[in-house]
Length: 306
Image (tube, rainbow, N blue to C red; front, side):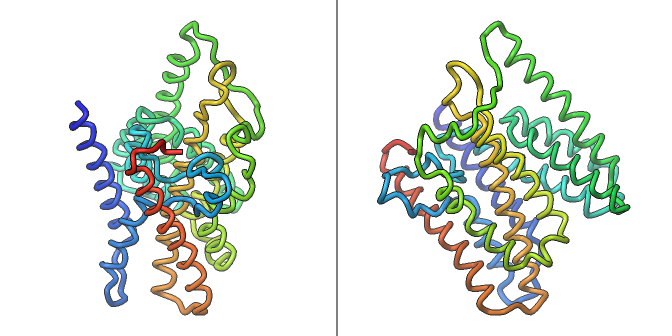
């Protein structure tokens, strides 16, 4: 059973890298295929910038972590969530998509929620909010794919999971518990910034372009939902410190990273940009990659993942 589990988890990482590679799309620049292959692979191991490890010796708590080697279900969720997120982006990138996308999207939504529901409880409100904005701005979007590929299957599977989790006789509830993560770390704000350096820098420096890109709009909105759950909510009682809403911020930060890497790849290939902006953005990303390598080595030593 253990060997089988390892095979499945390795396969999920391979599928994740391949999905990222094809989603990034062909680059016209010389060596473009190698560049997107390296970036797709690096995204499977990136981590928050571990600048505070010398201070508190913590590699995990307080950060919005990205490399979850201790959580098989989170590793399984990532490729499923990514593929589902690609369909979610198509809802706003095209007003009409092919009919086969609705059942495939519905299947990915259900599978992702069965792995962990944290992606789904973030992406549904994010899509709804963006859909309302699209209507206000009178922009066309594929509401058929949204309703039949996301809302109906998503609500059904979440309702089933809610009933199974909170109607079993065990005392469980969701409570408002601001910054409960502070029980694990005293550097929440700084660690949040270290977790978000690449997304923040890319968004600030390329704001005029990024603000008009549907995939990054959706990724940021979904991350805002996930971060809100992480910092403000918890399960009550004996489950208070289990951090089950931590997964929401983690999966949405991964998708935000992926969406911004894709955007930067395409933008820098097609438009002229100041060299210092490229250096700053990719330099920040490389810091995340270097921290991912350090964290991977740390986990391989056999110590606790924290």
